[in-house]
Image (tube, rainbow, N blue to C red; front, top):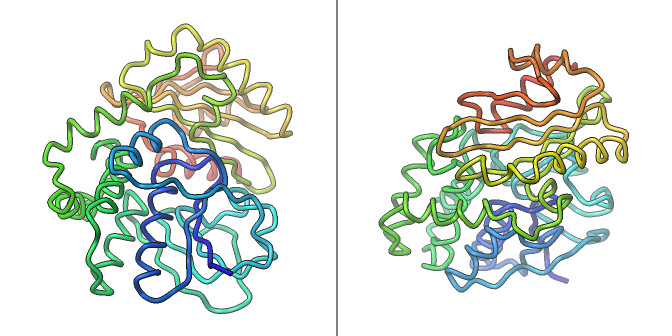
Length: 306
């Protein structure tokens, strides 16, 4: 039975590409391993895999009894419901350490960088394994996505250095053009169900017993969602009720203006004002310079709700 490596629920490009790349590396190190994902590809991830001719991982929803590696997460809320019945061999991530625990020591690579693929690319170098051209391409795209073409507060010099190395391997020299091409795909909303848009890049968090959900749509222009914004607002309110959460947020991030319009459904809007210094008006707040859920939204909200 193969070991499986997978990312978080509602997979994004980093969680998918990191799983593929880590499985490739581990296979070359002698492990019987395959990538998996907990849900369907989003449009950006589909574009990236097709661009470099890489097959999508299999969708797997039950991991009981399996040996597994986790990438791009270590929170139970983002893991399979039966993770406790799996044997976790390792974690490769770029977020804070979550609440996943293990019964034995494990391999753990958790670095304060902008993307899990930055860590995986560095693992190839550490083990002396050459990165294939197609794998270099998808990891490059994942880093550009997660760091918002190096504009995000999460971006580090390590991310930029790894991207320079990967671009040489895969032959992509104009990283800005590649990034914009990806974000145009990511911005596409026409014909997509509203709940699917809310879940396109969505994560749940447990903040001192309070359920908090936060989704993000990264857009090349906020006007793209003008016609559906009211529907998005209604859906996050519905989602809050369905989950029994304290708060559900949706970040509408304008990558060109470098800021986020935050849609808010919360039991306590004052907590949003305290966390971000902006009072929501009609369930909306403009947050200039805010582009990262991981670094600029979740930590401040956790501090207030704890």
